[in-house]
Image (cartoon, rainbow, N blue to C red):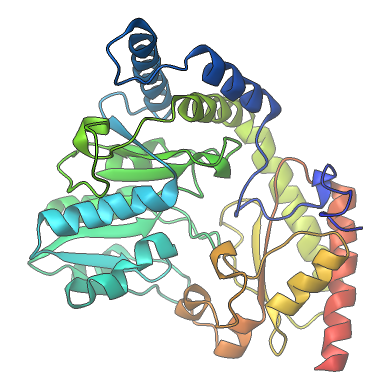
Length: 383
């Protein structure tokens, strides 16, 4: 069975939630209704435009309230990548002599700055546990450091970082904190991290919303705009706002908030089930993810094998997993994130990521475990 050939509706075999989560059905319905009923451009002066503008402000208020950030602002973007770019480029180009401190396990939409602002970037590498102790952060902050960018949750390993502690360190040194919350929103309690961050970014399709919607929750709007055009979003992001997308994102987040406790327990149980099955099979593998990481995100290294080959074979059997980050799916170079946590090149090349979600069942996880064991054993014989 192949997900692209008649098995699209069997989402129990979809194990790539960290790349994109299936949208909630009621969220799709809301998106369609809002799109039809509020067709006016919120920048227009006529009644349909004013109605759209009012709805936009109400949706922003609702989303901020869900994040316990009523005193902050929401800049709407097309997703997490644009949001991360706007924060980093917005600060670095507003203060063109400042420095950026970038964590080694950040997403590519933030890591781009490592090359783009080459001489103005310092890289913060994790310790053996994949963590960034506050003293390590403080040691790398220089007099001209103006922004620190780190993920709330690493998208490849599921490592959860102590944002509030790092934020306190930044405040003491007059450094702004950008926290990439793309993998955290809808899956963790983000309230303290949002409150502590100067910029907190998100993407709706990671938690049951729709693609094309993301944003920045911020306390500082003094950024250099990156898209020229109209004066939308306080002049920071030109282009007609995706009101229906934001309304859908708010609805999705409400659902996630109401089910988070039960969903977390379920994902932990499924994660343990998969791990137990692989340990029983006595495969040669390494956990890149930690038990205290994001529930349901499992990173496994099979030294001597190629993760992309395992992914391809599982796909033929109808199971959707990824080779590390989805953004590296067609790249045979080892993941810089997996290398940064101390894995060798051979271990990094043999890494796959399995990310569980609400449609996965015990039966599907057991089937995945059987297929993975068979695939690894077969490829070991061919290696």
